[in-house]
Amino acid sequence: MYAITIPEPGGPEALVWSEVPDAVAGEGEVLVDVVASAVNRADILQRQGFYNPPPGASPYPGLECSGRIAEIGPGVSGWAVGDEVCALLAGGGYAEKVAVPAGQLLPVPKGLDVRRAAALPEVVCTVWSNVFMIAHLRPGETLLVHGGSSGIGTMAIQLAKAVGAKVAVTAGTPEQLDRCAELGADILINYREQDFVEEVRKATDGAGADVILDNMGAKYLDRNIQALAVNGRLAIIGMQGGVKGELNIATLLNKRAAISATSLRARPVGEKTAIVAAVREHVWPLVDAGHIRPVVDRELPMSDAAAAHRIVEESGHIGKVLLVRQ
Image (cartoon, rainbow, N blue to C red; front, top):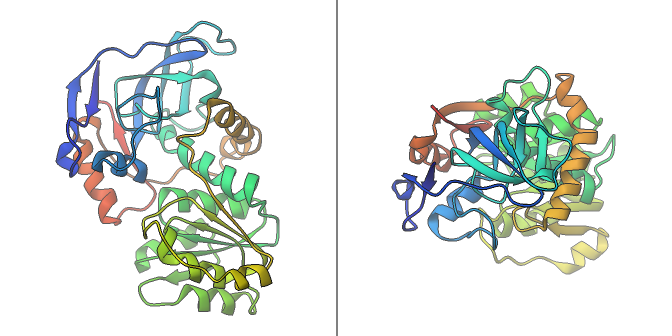
């Protein structure tokens, strides 16, 4: 089979479409013929040499994919060869085939073609596990999403609105903010021109955000705490703004606030299986009904993954960038 390999860490040109050994379905796994994958920030970090796959995972980038089951491994039930699926992966999505633990599979939702389903698993599992399973966003509360026009952001807006929350977003251009508004965002903040702490307080009569979904890490840490409401919850899922920051513990104590920080990739299969099961129960009916849809910026050939990485690194896209097998 062919896959995107990284012979040496580096820029986008480090991604090479190469012939590699065929993937094989092991115990509890299925083999998926990949139709499409999607680019995530973690793939860029892996390409740069900063985010290696966990032990035993595929060495190739790609944390989600869609396709059709080609083979059922030992100990798997409930799936059949030919089923159209999408999957949460620990790696290997940028390839013609990938072996997936059966518990990390989801059926392609009704009304959605198999290709676009590749835009769903990583973002839905990330948002649901952090915003709902950990931070417990409730109807009537305010969610602040940094990077509202990203794949994560566009999904967070839709899911939060579906449960009756108010949504504030940050983004860097008027076009990105307009798209967030179309998806239901209530409070639009241009982070290049406005102070998100001030804007969130103004829009909530001084209360602040009940939950913040943060992809920036260190750069926003202190300001995020300032923007939190009493009993607020900060969910950190990225470190685009650095890995070391300072915060005022007194402010955290006074607000009775909580901070969580998680990633999906390195979690044990059992934890991922539980998240995927929760997504199938709570989110998939909304996707089946058409209330929630993946936002896809563009599609590129999988062999041209370098161009896709450049697009994502420039942050000019809205939603997901897909890699499609030709």
